[in-house]
Length: 388
View 1 (cartoon, helix red, strand yellow):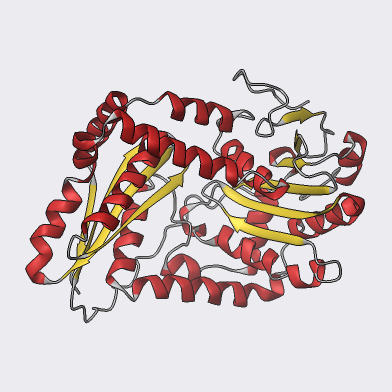
View 2: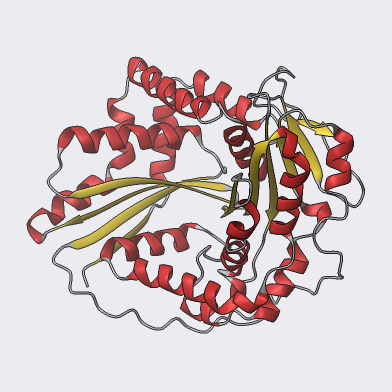
């Protein structure tokens, strides 16, 4: 049977997953109360840890699975999606409860062995996206910030050398190593009998003996990026908290976004909040002409301190209420339920992780937030500046 989370929460909560007895040859199964009678959402997550030379391979596996979607969901018009998450790959399908057998079949097909004959297409998609991000100063800043703050983790998108190194055999090996039933978690929103779930997802994924990850294969040096003809200097700063989902950084991100909209700083600026295994990262990224470059640098460097200095109890209460509303609004449908709860389960915070997060968010005081942000700000932030 699946393990139960130790966080106390009402069993009837639509955001608390109840473990369902799992077959030895099937995934761990968690079930959520139905939020929309007649509709079922299924989300299967697969944790993926890439070796450095494999960086981007999970993105390619997700792209290969996504390419199969039109032929699987077109006949009935059901919703389905495949996404690369900070923790692995998530496969999701949603449709009428009367078609649960078909939904399960679609999910099995998506999670099945990759269509290796389309490896060149997947590699080309990755290469285009990686190249697109390197064609602007802001894109290069983001890539460098993400790579530097993801300590010990290969970049999700990969790099030029690792994308070029993708092969059908390598993708097959990664799928065999990661897509094993005992490593998967299935989250179900809707009324589906446990017997149906057990029968539908028994013997899912790979059952071959996996090869060891190619951890010792060296990654070739990336080619030096071509200089850009930039009129403005792009720069960024990133702070990290040592947890996968930080409510303090989520609140700070809202305050900083509000500041940008209200103050018109005179240069381009934006806020980003990233999640990765074991950490949350808040980034400020901007671009300025030379005359405004000093202002941009000061704005970036003092970001968390400004939030810590100006917030009051009423400000925190307002932002917390907004975040809570956004989170709960996204979980009003079965597909929203499985995505939200799945995100917390994948991050390793447990079946009641959403409830625990909301409780921590609502208990957050202005003084506690200021202390936490100053502590994060005092740690060494990652800074990047690109002018060509």
